[in-house]
Every structure is written in C-alpha cells, then in structure tokens.
Picture 1 (cartoon, one colour):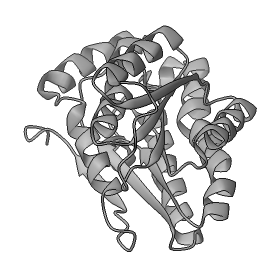
Picture 2 (cartoon, helix red, strand yellow):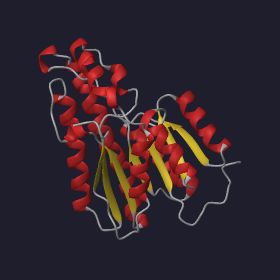
Picture 3 (cartoon, one colour):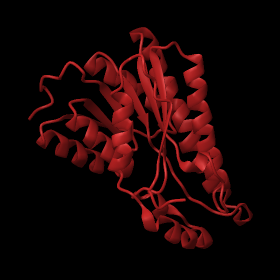
Picture 4 (tube, helix red, strand yellow):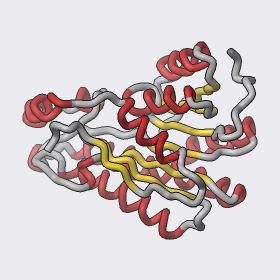
Length: 249
C-alpha cells in the first residue's frame, strides 16, 4: 500500500531517530502498525529504506531521511522538510545513541566525546528543531530514550551514565518549561537486544557487558512503552517509564 493511505483520526506524524536498528527500528514498526505516519532517521540509508519498505509492504506509512543527530543544521532541515510534506510534526522520538563503555583510566577521550556529541548534543538538536513547530501548532511530544544508566553508575559507565542523566535532566527541564500542550517523556530501558554493545572497544567493558546482557529483552518492549506514552489523552503527560528485564536487579 502506498504512503497515500488515509490516516486514522488519531494518527500522528512521528520522527524516530536512530531508526535503522534496535529500539528505533522496533518503534517505527510498532507506531506504523498503529496507523501513525513515521519518518525514520539515521545515517545508514540502506537500512532505513529497508525498514521503511517493510512498513509500506505491511500497509503502513513511512518515509526515510538520512540523519546525523550531531549535525544541528541537518536535523533542523529534516524536521522542516517533514512539516513541509505532512503539514505538521507531532512527535520526535530521540532514540539515537552510542554506548562505548570504558573505565575512565582507559583514557578513551574520543569515545567520551562521541557519547556527548550523540547522546546529549544530538538530543538538544532534536529538541531545537521541533520546538518552534510545536509552539506554532500549540502542541507536540518529545520522547527521549535514556537508560537505567541515568539512575545508576557502574564501573565503565561513568561517561555513558553522565550522558543519560543529562538526557533525563534535559527532558525534565523541557517538561517544566513548556506549555501543557507540549509533552515530554523519558523512556528508560534496562538491558535490551540491540547493537549498542557491539561498539565497545575496551576489553574490560566488553567482558563485563557479556555477563550483564544475558537477560536482555526485545526492543519491542521499549516500543510498546513509547506507544503507551503517545496514546494517552492530551491532558495526561507520562513523564518517565522504566522498562527492564524481570531478571535485571
């Protein structure tokens, strides 16, 4: 079915960043199956197009845009283009993130910088791009995908946890500063099946993560939480949902 399918009255226009795999892909698939117009953003365009085509083949509505969240101008241009094509943007799911864990004394400064660029500045770029449209529309929803690392620190997670605490704090600040029509939700996953752990270069962190990830839950568990937050009436703002494996303590 083409992207011209008639949208249900509850349909939202949703941008999902980091949508080429993991939580982002699962979120795009679920929201599209529920009738929303989804736009998938990430750097891996071939993966994006494959997911978008899967959605369209199942009767959903999806577009794809190459998106590097560290590029503020690029994020703003992508959001503006979505508004031009669809008349509005209702939701941004700020999901793009990296997790190259390491001890501080490993001195992997480039990896620290990358986490700050993607996990913190990337979130800010998304917020900056959508807020003018949300204010003009009189409403919108910012969803931040954080981590249980926002609430705990373990050896090798100091910088990662700092970026996720920052993500939580930024989203909470947005909630406090915004008019009631603009909602803000932090989704806080525990151990989830994803590619994040594959990019850990520090040997000690790699070993620890193999044990830590033995009880991972599917990415769709997080997508369901996002769907729940988006599906609430306009007078309900779900501020945070923590979702982790039952076996994770």
